[in-house]
Amino acid sequence: MEIDSALCVAGAVCAVGFSAAGSAIGIGKAACAAIGAWKRCYAQNKPAPYILFSYIGAPLTQTLYGMILMFVILGLVGNCVPGAGIAAVILGIFAGLGIGASAAMQGQAAAGAADSQAETGKGLANNMAALGVVETVAIFVMVFAMIAIGSLKAPEAAADAPAPAAAEQVVD
Image 1: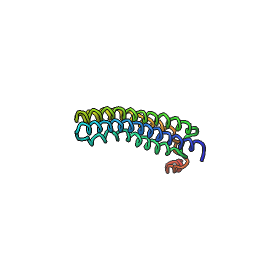
Image 2: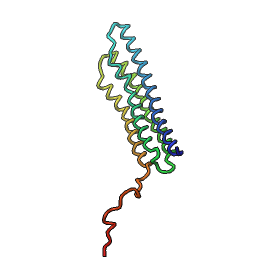
Image 3: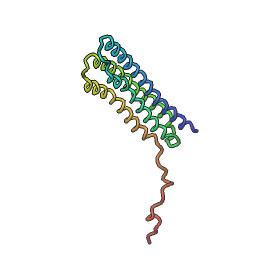
């Protein structure tokens, strides 16, 4: 495997790895808050709201965005312009960090939402809308990174295309 292709694989792993790390941090924050909220509900003999699982799972989607980006970067393997490998690594690192940061902060917001939901039993739509705004950052990073990846692909080889029939005719 040539160096550019190997670096593209490394960039793909960085994209999904940093995204997943952010998801893990965000899920951990939200889960801690939900568990604490459930404990308060049990202590007050209130029903423990199952809806808190939606807040816990919210940061998981950023791992999926990192995975999509990983597959797009892997599409460069064997089909990239010379020197694209280092660009793929840099892109994978920073896009993964952007997506992962979105997940970590979404988990922080989900922690507050879980606490609020358990306390009041209200606000699901507003809470989910707020989490959606935080998630939008990850979607933007993924899309913009995919656009940038397009510039790293090798152009189609013109020699492989059949010659047009009109070019073969000789005009007298």
